[in-house]
Image (cartoon, rainbow, N blue to C red):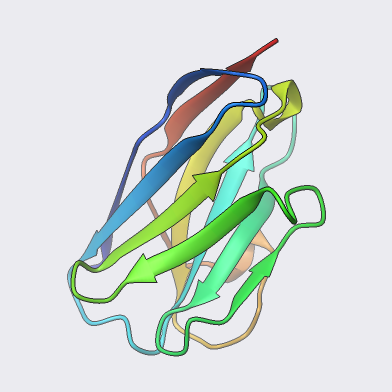
Length: 124
């Protein structure tokens, strides 16, 4: 069974930066797409960023393009989300997810494995 564990969340001021990590274990991830999602109170869970594990190709939600960067370290089986120029509206619980395909999926239901989430709070 695939296990995903997020870390790195916390409280940060607007315009600040934060880096989230997702440690993956249980199997190899060469054919996987890894994604970051977020969910704010009273809102639907939404896609943030994705990466194809083997080739490293990335894709992003329009709301975070130019501010967030997703990357991976193959040796550590870890995916990162570097968040810069944070805004109050970025406040949410951030989840790491994985799917067993190469498609650039953005829907939560397309992802099979999920971490427990890590809280990111941006203050004004």
